[in-house]
Amino acid sequence: MKTSFSKPLLVAVILLGVTVNVLWHKANRLAQERDKYIENTDALLSEVQRIQVDSTRMALDAKTLRMTVSEYEEYRTEDAALIKRLGLRIKDIEAAARHQLVVEAPIIAPVVDSVVVRDTVLVAMQKVEMITPYIEFKGVIEDRVLRANVRVPVTLNQAVWIEYKHRFLWWRWKVKAVHQTITSDNPHVEIGYSEFIRMEKRD
Image 1 (spheres, rainbow, N blue to C red):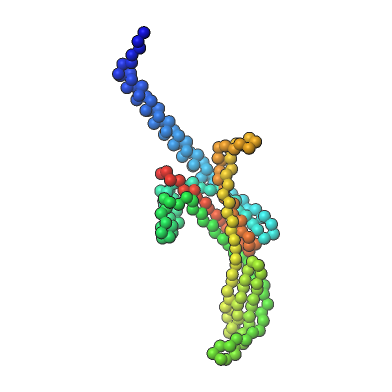
Image 2 (cartoon, one colour):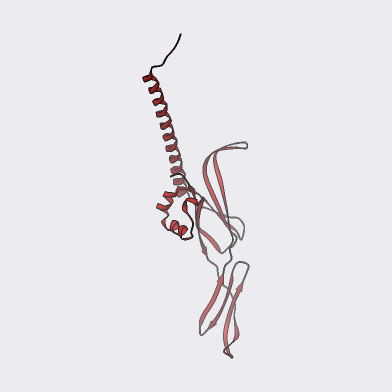
């Protein structure tokens, strides 16, 4: 027995298939937008975790944000302008990070008498100097005025890692959040704030 489809039925089936495909893609896009919104909200509302690794090294753990290029240009206008001034194209950026450092170090140094030659004339002044592995302070006191230079060397290490929602043995699936952990090797340097944004090419 020969079965034949009428043209209207065939057209209806094709239209139904196209409609289902379009709706599936829209639903998938909405689900991705929802997941991104939940991740970003969680990253913005979650507290930064501070970790004292050892006596001289501290770490900061913060969740990352996800933004499209247009969102970055809208919500991070100053950073976007700086990137452009550097001669870079924002759409070529994979990720953007910003860290705020706070240096708070006590200066405890002896004041010693010293003499310098200035225009063939000996000038008496006092010298202050403090040199440790974490801070260098050198200055002179002349006419009751302190002129000094302070140098605080610091190395920041950054690690970006993934937190998964599900784990079973060695399998991991469904990303819950992307973290960044920043460490400072100078005990006088505190990481006050840290932000890491993953740039998404799709707008």
